[in-house]
Image 1 (cartoon, rainbow, N blue to C red):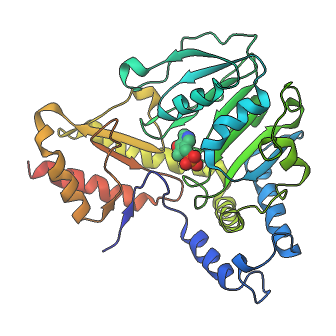
Image 2: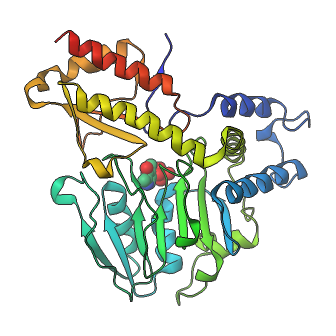
Image 3: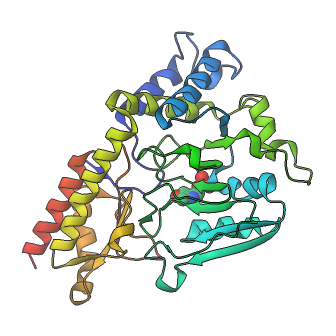
Length: 355
Ligand SMILES: *Cc1c(COP(=O)(O)O)cnc(C)c1O
């Protein structure tokens, strides 16, 4: 049976990414050797690194003065690397969910953390909008897409201090004005590549300002200086990321991706709103284009397990909601074809008819 992969992460990747990576694992760049079996310092792999950085810059329109890094440790290591490198006295955080909390927890090890606003009291069903960013903060940290709760900050906000963003689950899903950010980071395994590589886009001039000593591997300047080759980088995920970026460029870049993502998300949200069995869980204006959360309406609550079975039997994978929200979550990342969303909507319609 054809599977519709709605997994939240690791998640669906373009067919081209998977196929080209398999080929390179067997025979990399015509070397007769496998991608996993050659030096990361070979000219062939250096070319992969260079093109991946170049495509990041081109596709996101990254201005001069920023570096693009590929590191290990996941977005979770960035929760500590960001304050290690940027927090001297005080940092401001917007609390929009689980990942924001994890980021705040690490920052507290390095200095004062101001939570400027939180939607915790409403189980993170919306993005707080009325708040003041302290102008004496070293930076303001946001999570642009809340993978677990299904909310998203849809615009590049204005911040009086350096803006830092965790874009793990919406990078390359829409055009971003990178010049408004000092640092953007994310794990690759939602919208870009297999797990194992973390991207960091950082404005060079922000570094070297804190007074503490930073361990070599945790200092962004180490990786800038050595072009992400201070130590052995995760070569296979980087190669796969390059394939995804080539695919994205061929399709028309982030503008085209954004159009497709809005179209897919609208199609599913429209059905959630129309169908008597279901309802969305988040404020309409903050609905994520990447992670679409919904539950059964009160009077149909008892049908939840049955719908899950029903949809699973039709090839829907990964639609169980995160335990902190319940119900269902369909992740509709860049590589998810519209056909998968159509199939899910079809399942919802037929399930409704049967009840
Ligand atoms: C998945 C996710 C993370 C954690 O990423 P790891 O690479 O597993 O550390 C952090 N932030 C957001 C928004 C995520 O979706």
